[in-house]
Length: 508
Image: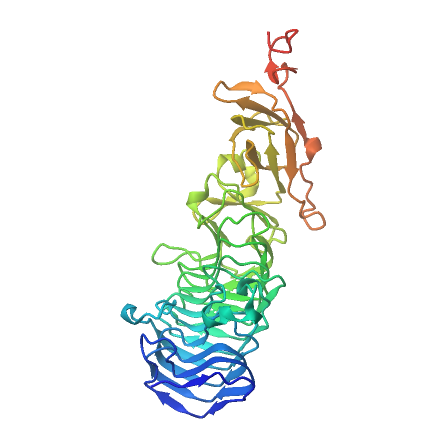
């Protein structure tokens, strides 16, 4: 059987205290245990204290209807998405204190053309609703899914929905929701993401014993606050492919051997996550299996060529953990430089930077101040101040850049070019401590010493200026740019000549 409330605008409906068993007709669109269908505004309507069990297709479906209260219901052993907003045009509804458990995959032969083959217990297609105190447990895929596609179905034909884009709409309320024991995600914004124009607050998430506690993807302007992520088998938060900064604050991560607290990727500039006032426990370094717990784990999951570092502050860890940050072994050619400005990630308590253990990062650092991390790929360098510089040659010619310390002649490194999304010019991405440097360029393949036509230096914002160790950072004044000593620049060719320039402005 199925129950449908059909085109009843401005009529308050009430379904309360009912047990619904074996309803829902698999493969038949619109045939669900409880279904508000294109009813418009039905303020005052309630679906409360009902039990839906062994549903053949979905549980409580709000479709083209607004201001319904769905509260204190239990749904157990259902197929496809369970509590859902169907078309993405539904607004001002409230899902409060509902339990959904054992949400099963809809069989392919009974597909109704949606994503029920990857079922979520709470399927959110429009954020302009209220989600409070719901528990989503034991799904064969996901507990809570923000799948914010375009408005579709019959709702797409309504004038009130013209021009609406769900993934940029504000979030009304998301508070104290729990997702546990789900096969894949506790909660996710994958894959279309959520990018509200005003900041959205995910408050009081509890997500445990899933594969991923929370996957943030394609998302921006979201703040995760007062959350708990525990005993998730891969990671508490998987963070990759996002847009603009997201924040995690005042939260708690509990893990065990071989799991990660937050798994970062290399995100584009201004897209990295900021993590504040958050604790990590249970990620003991050594496991009997030989694997490691990784409270903070930065890897190459869909990493971008142009990228920045996460911002971390006021974090706490188990006292017996040797290193809080793991750097993936596949990042040896990247610039990894994560600041610990208050020393909370370093067992000695001194501030500094985590860097990847690669020559382009360590050549200019005083490595006597560094200690190895979990797999020797990461180093923690105490009382070290680093700053990133993007060098743009203003040219598309193929160059290498040679950087040499002017205070220690043994410290020299030749950098290869890289190209960002925003420039076709030959560029270099370098991270350096305070020192005086000489810089010159080799044009390939001849390796001629050249001065590119319009070199610019772009420095990252300085950090740590007011906190210990009161860093002094490299500036433009620290760089002696041009030809090497005993070489002369010839104006016509931009060559650096060991002899004289000709009258035509070229090397003789």
